[in-house]
Image 1 (cartoon, rainbow over the protein chains, first blue to last red):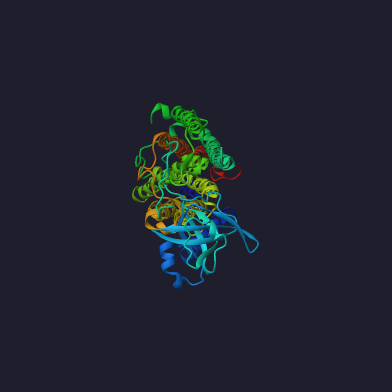
Image 2: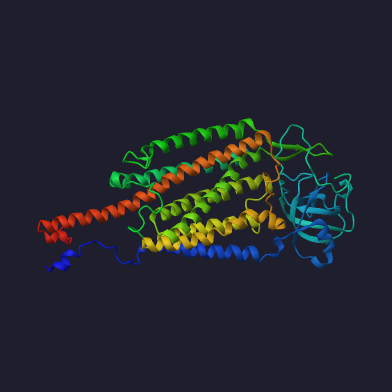
Length: 176
Length: 55
Length: 267
């Protein structure tokens, strides 16, 4: 064998070859890229994801029409459990920045739905009387109410724990 | 205690995952640790100390 | 390399890492004691009705979730620095560190999503909220680093894998400020509360337990990172040592005149 060949025995890294072993990671890479695009499209494309404060929702009532939107506010004391169209519902008044709106939430309310803890509701403005309004402490009672079916709690960032401490709650009124 | 199921699930999944991952890392290191001679086991080499001999 | 960092030759452990591991386990036990036994649940009284409000015992998940989130940031920032280092210096130390930090960080990030989801069900009333900017940016972060790991496995040439991985890591880490600042920049698109520590709305034993959580999960990160780095380094050395041994073996065969063995035939 010629010496030049014998001298060239250094094992060199083989030229990269596509193999079945690489197919799965490649597929995963592509799926991850597609998932990122999907998440961004879903996140950026949904206008209902912005939370309107109660005062903004009241101000934009004609503009919002019967379209669904999200509203954030603080429930006032006085949560009335009732039935609406054969489904369980909870009726209460929501407030923010001194503006009130009555809410009829159909379906299971959040486990930690509590007066003084802000909630984000998804639904639409509806004209008509509010069932159980007599049980509300300070209803808006303006002929409109928010008919909602999706409720999540927006907890605050206060973790100062001491026995008997009163919660800091945004005051909407004397009842708030 | 309220929400006990959620607490057990959250802490259990996290600590369990760490335990499984830690074991997998230790196991993965056993074979190369046996094969690589001691003089080449310099995994705390300062950055750049062996620059140039590898890509 | 110091004596304490040397392995015993059969594992990636060393005296130093065993001390670190023991401290981590002790810390975890102490954290569980404080998180479940000594700190109070989050219960406050409504100022007008006197009703109990708050997160109740679900708050105990935050001693886990918040430190995991912070050390996810640490791992990915470390990965980004190491990736930049690799692109500048092209040394294996940086690449091995970047790969280790990305893998450990992805485990942390996945657990942030899972523990956050488990906390969110009782407290928020939802496992997952599409459109919440912090959730979305964290999910994107997790997906990008999962993609980083998949890309490295999908690339055959180690140098190309290191180079491509470094670029992906530097792009992915740009999501971190979005994750962190999302609660301030898009206040009306997230259920997440603003920073508690920034506004000092935490005190006494609750604050201590959270700080203990940071310490303990910092130790968990350090231990995992140390071992994962050593595994990466050893695997690289193993591959290169295998090549060097092959060369030596074949040269020895040539010296002995056994050309067939030297070119790999009949072996």
